[in-house]
Amino acid sequence: MRALVVGGAGFIGSHLCRALLQSGHTVTCMDNFSLGTERNISDLTERAGFLLCRGDASEEAALRSVFVEAKPDYVFHLAANSDIRASAQNPEVEYQNTYSTTFQILNCMRRYGVKRMFFASTSAVYGDKRDILLDEHTPDLAPVSYYGAAKLGAEALIHAFSYMNDIRALVFRFPNVIGPGLTHGVIYDFIRKLEKDPKRLEILGDGRQTKPYIYIRDLIDAICQFMDGEEDGVTLYNVGVSGETSVTGIADVICREKGLFGVTYCYTGGEGGWKGDVPRFRYGLDNIHKAGWQARYTSDEAVEMTVRAALAERDA
Amino acid sequence: MRALVVGGAGFIGSHLCRALLQSGHTVTCMDNFSLGTERNISDLTERAGFLLCRGDASEEAALRSVFVEAKPDYVFHLAANSDIRASAQNPEVEYQNTYSTTFQILNCMRRYGVKRMFFASTSAVYGDKRDILLDEHTPDLAPVSYYGAAKLGAEALIHAFSYMNDIRALVFRFPNVIGPGLTHGVIYDFIRKLEKDPKRLEILGDGRQTKPYIYIRDLIDAICQFMDGEEDGVTLYNVGVSGETSVTGIADVICREKGLFGVTYCYTGGEGGWKGDVPRFRYGLDNIHKAGWQARYTSDEAVEMTVRAALAERDA
Image (cartoon, rainbow over all chains, first blue to last red; front, top):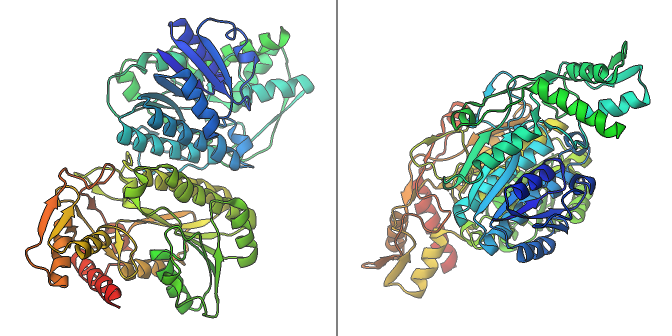
């Protein structure tokens, strides 16, 4: 198969490129390197069957030339602004990097007759519904972040393009994904802060924000398991893990793994880390479990493995 | 109040401008005249308190200068591609005219601190769910048209911008709106076709597509009744009428009103008029009825009144 991975130099995208290559597929990786890095794909650039195209998928001309060159059978769309906290100050980033990329990709698929796609959606499409078990049929989706809004709009586009052009789309809504190669987020932030000041750690919110963290390998396995599904139209799953980890819990793991004791935690206060943050949610996973997939690692295990990997990377 | 009506020279927008002026508000009308017309607002241009700004709301600079000049307290966002059949061939139109206008308007409201808006959404956000009574809490929204997808994406943006910036938004999801000044759609098409050939009428689909048609005055009354609501966040209503009218029924009314007998109806066949058309749906109106609004005219009455007005306009 000829795969096009848009956002392929990003955290999730680079792991996916690697998995697709290992399964014998040809992989074209397109990335604008806004969040993606050379380092993420440094082991891939010389591999046979791997092609890197620098370019911004929100720009029609750039994207069309990649479609013409790569002739993909399958598009994996992971291009987005994944730094939700950053876009809270600048919604334009979500319009450009999350929504417009999706529109242009779908419009290219329509033009060039590409019939399969994977889309990385998010638990943020639900909004702040902390008292409800969120499953794929939860009504009244009301995103509270520009990121969640752009992703929900992207899902809507996928429905219409799928219907109009007989495209099979696999959509995963997942919460925070962590693992080796992470470039932002709470684990990354805490490690940097503790390097600057190993005695005091500023924690956004009250530290009780509690979320499920899925390990990158689990997510990649799920994509590979479901990507060849035979259902027409849009197949949508919540993808996640058992358990969840509090922000203070993450700080504890990092301090322990770094061998720091007696660090003072200074909380900025308030329920969420920032406006648009959803501090807690209950994530229903029955559908994907019934379909035969289950995460190997719990949220706490994912956090521990990620912290260890991140510290090892920084020591290297 | 200083109202900004974006899409104010369009079919619905121009009726709304008129109603707002009559209630004593100052009205700035912005339109790119892609579907809006000079004629729609010809009686308004000389009125005190009315300002016309030509420009495209999807262009940030143009929109910002309108916000600076108009200093609106309230934005009524009716700018969209309302010709769904046309955009089926060219989804770019929906990206530009329906979604991007919404993003730019919300981003200007954020910048200039405007705290109230009305948004014209659509029954097309639900997709093709003909066996379900569609109410505001129906889950699994899956638009089948690019139009419906762009509107659902726009709603998602409204949720996030409302939450992040304390904007009160009134969102109406309504089906086909008809009345004097209509510039496209089935009634308009049939009248033109019968002018060319009064013996034979081509009807898209099998003619049994059956939809509720709401009369423009009813919709405007609903906007005026709910626009000053005191609820925070997003207030969402399905807005519609009792009854529905089939496409063949519309043809019958037009032939009767035109005094044509024995016209041969030639059906192109198939359930929908075009791909992305939703041929039938059941529209739940309990919430807006409970809130104290009800349409005065049934769907059949709306069709008759509109046909008479359209024929009178063409005779004039």
